[in-house]
Amino acid sequence: MERQPVKSRILRSVGYEDKTKILEIEFYSGLVYQYSGVPPKVYADLMHSGEIGKYYSEKVRPKFQAKPVVP
Image (cartoon, rainbow, N blue to C red; front, side, top):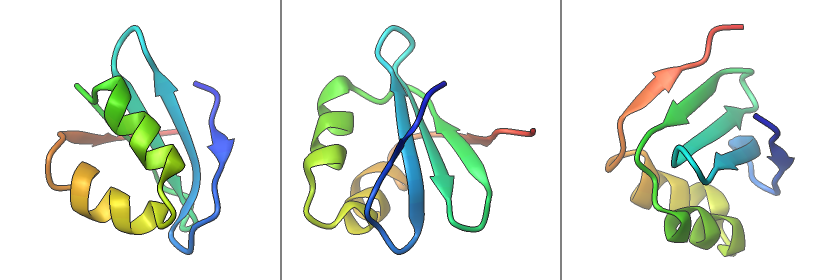
């Protein structure tokens, strides 16, 4: 999945697959997680948020199931 760099202190890049509704987030630590069942609106709101890390922490992390992506 292709990710776009974002301006955040904790998130390095974000990608989204509309067909599968999978949101992929790369952290500055190097860890990558995929969140399943994420509606397109949540992805759009995340990418347009003024505070992308805060939006992630409040609206994505607690609400969607995550699995680590192993390189």
